[in-house]
Image (cartoon, rainbow, N blue to C red; front, side, top):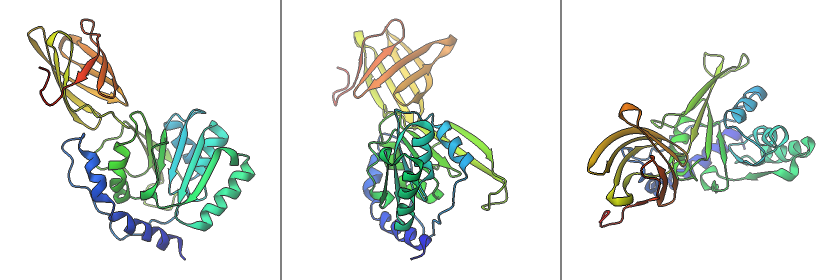
Amino acid sequence: MHEATTRLQALSRGIGNLATAAALLAPFPGLGATPTVPVEDVPFITTPDHVTVAMLELAGVGAQDHVIDLGSGDGRIVITAAKRFGASGLGVEIVPDLVAQSRVNARRAGVAARTRFEVQDLYATDLSTASVVTMYLLPEVNLALRPRLLALKPGTRLVSHDWALGDWAPDRTLTVAVPEKTIGREKLSRLHLWTVPAAVQGLWCGPAGATLQLQQRYQVLSALLTQGGLARSYSGRLHGAALELLGEAGARWQATVDGEVLRGGDATATLPWRRAGAAGCG
């Protein structure tokens, strides 16, 4: 069967799973309805070797990482992650012939022990073991996957070749020259990097009656800190589980998100802060 047709069937099956995935967007307010995937082919387009390396470098891949490549084609991203960067990896591909070729390529590269390739629907793939997820799909497919990507462990890095994740702005975009590129007019590839943010929306309770009200849109934050009878406004960002807020006159408030606890704060409030319960901070 034609590779693009096989991938199209996988996308069609994935539509039925999107309603469940939409519930995962709850910690990230302001999002619209989960998009549907149009009936379009997702052909296998080879990622040039120098773009593969640039994607992995952008994610800061190292020996401690486990890379999952969605739509892994001939396996080159996972194989390069293992051979050049020492990582382990999983390639997910719906076309059996490409998976078979990937396994052969991994053996030839001497990294079969650290890599795995599976014939699998990317919508059904367990991503929870990934510290890095790579993609070269389509905008609509990225949007369909976004709820699951947002639900990954804070600090997980995501790299997409060319296509963004809707209104979730990347933390960084790198442009790479690709003279041999056959898609589009520009001979360029744009590589987008995101770091999955912790979900911190809501009220947090600190020492001596202090409160912190956080509003979150992806990695961007606004906050109201009430402490010692004074209320101060902050703006800030999340980088995985690391939270930083900046206020007037250079005021800075930093913390690390640890589940239902914020550890840190400014110099006057270093004790753990806890997420408010149904009764608030009373």
